[in-house]
Length: 254
Image (cartoon, rainbow, N blue to C red; front, top):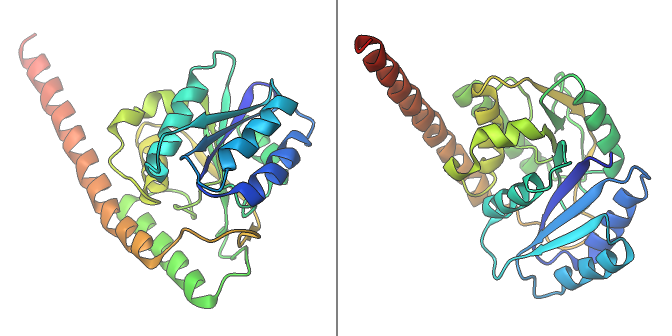
């Protein structure tokens, strides 16, 4: 996995980020870790720098000047990862241990067959979530079914952030054209990849509620995502219409 990198956005994750990175490095596969920290006041960025000193070839921190948002953190992280020539596989995951690093090798193995692989909480009609209150589980499951219905995504867990990408997927998507900000960003990534003709797949994971720190998820974020999926679909339809009109004009001028 020396040609792989994990991108992890952080804001006030000092308590969990060091043990998480140690566990990823402990996989013994030379995978790189890129933390994108939004100037966390709790010293998360400094904690990552301590590990950079310990693992200078594997652990890196991209320091941003302020809290600029979930989507922009990933976009900056992906762009940084793509600037590294030998990187072929890019992963995204949470900083709070809700995504178990032990699943990374399985996602990588699936990337031998698919362009984008999602670590899924909702495969084959089952739910693989630990320590969530029933109300949050119902809200999340309903939101995923709704997003799948609106967008036509061929994955069950549209809002999962535990994802593996082949390099060419993120190069093709055009990160500068992303319209989403919060967790709807995760839906848009999958939607754009599917519309671009890339193959998507899922592997089952066990999603565990964060062990340390405070969750940043809220009802507002989820309802915002439900609204944005229509924006994603409509924008994509407009782009397809423009492309079709351009091709027709080109044909008429032959």
